[in-house]
Length: 447
Image 1 (cartoon, one colour):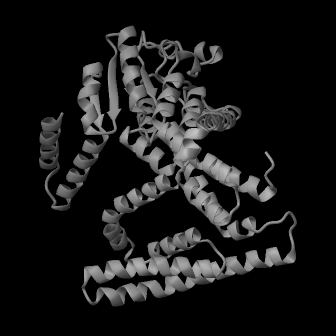
Image 2: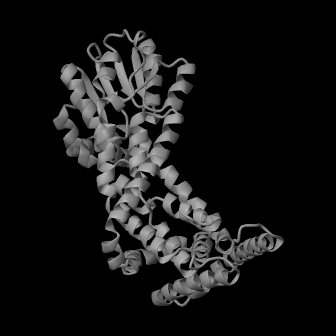
Image 3: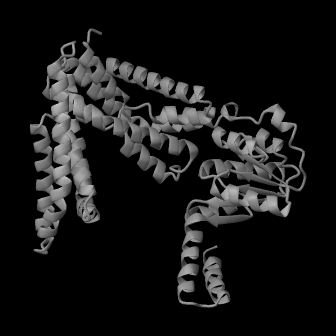
């Protein structure tokens, strides 16, 4: 499309980034942050954010790049990098002393004003050394985080966070040219659609060739196919430097906004497609031939809970098998002699292969709440007599699990609080039977 190397590199970075804020909030709100695909999405998003740091350092060089490297370009990069490191070191040395001095006056307003002055001061100092303002703001955050007052600063800034978020998105709306949007609506929709499809295909291909499950690849590729909020910052920097024509600037900006509006729809579509039976990982025929147990325990998920349960059952001599969706975990523990098989629990064929018809107990120790619900329904539909023990992430999920057919639901947050209470009472040298009685009373009240 006629872009030079600097424009192409910049455009590629803008379109590659996904929204850390929106996706992490969505994963947290839906209790999917600790799921296998939730952890992978989080890792990718954090890596993208980390990649932004060297990009911001190199930004002035990229904007002024004319096609060839020279000694002056390399020297400018080194000078900027050295200046930023010097600024960071000085900030980390001086900030703790400055904060202590300010706090001696015991004026909360003075502390807040000082924090804002420091942030803007460090940002403009970095800008004067050749870095971008965004990079300067990042340096300010790193410097403050290393002080003993980081928690205090964070607490004071939380009420302002929503205000700045509002200002940020209001400013994005002000940048959009409505006449351009109306005139080029079909081009914007086409460009956004092609972008989402291409990003999705690339992410899915990485998952596929890395031998992850198809369902994880589908959910992750759909979830990260949009354009993120950091792209708006880069777009503004490109506008200030006249890097793109007005057409491409507005096209990228409009597509970014449209893709972010579509995040809920894209995520829901990805989860629906991933839940289609044929995209679930089947237990192989070779593994299936080894599953001939009766009155055994099926353990779903081989994290800390699954490992502890299997170790104890093995010592006692109770037969069990394990189904796990992480191929790396399966390979590791299969080599150690564990009866572990790779597959998705919430598929009827896999439960049958694991011997659900003859099983005495099904232990579901996975963090994906939706997969847990589906697994309970499927297991009970095949064998209504099997006992099901389930881990719930939050106490609010307990009643739902029981209504679906679970025989015992253990709430992760409640059990943790009861363990805390048990050990706190032990600090006061109370007899074991009293501490157990007290924790059991609370357990019965909640369950």
